[in-house]
Image 1 (tube, one colour):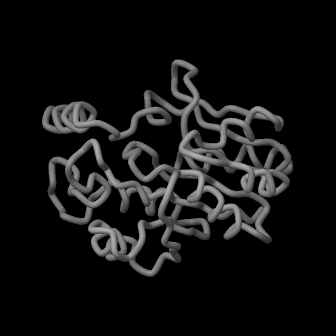
Image 2 (image 1 turned 135 degrees about the vertical axis):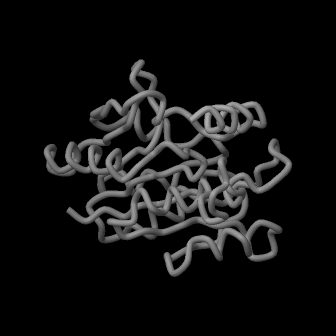
Amino acid sequence: MRVLAGICAAGSSTRMGFDKLAAPLPPATTPHDTCLTRACAASAHLDQCVILPAPDHPYYTARKALIGTAPSRCISGPFSNSLKALASAAHGYDGLLIQLADMPHITREHIAMLMDVFETHQGEAIVRACDSEGRTGHPVLFPSQCFGAFEALNGDIGAHAIIARYPLKQVVLSGDAATFDLDTPAAWQAFCSSAAQT
């Protein structure tokens, strides 16, 4: 089945004070090991569309350089605008995988697990990752019959209303991979401390 991986990377990292998606991850052995490059690598086996901020945004240039030749769209405004753009880009696909670019523990193997369940159910159910304690998270794989519902989304609340309306299958990912994101300075510090101990 044909699935488009939509990588959401248009956020402004306001709470962080720096570009968390383009900053090298510890232990910083390479400047190209970032949240954004990890997200792109995790779904590199699929067609991709990366949502970037507008070209006049201060983080645009660095993020654009990191994604290389991956197709992208520039979006401003609330998170729902990114989701709508991805649903539009996924026209003609069997499914749309929504990835958040600030989740450094998501790997290609995790996405393959979601794909396996999606294909097992003939692309007729939403497939959502959850962590080892059962907490729901990301990525989320939407079947094509959901795409039209994205147009009704508004604000920054995500696609919860869509998920509630369609059949749902959950895939347990090890540890907190499905729920850990670098969304606050505290999370960044915790991630750095953990990396320093390994």
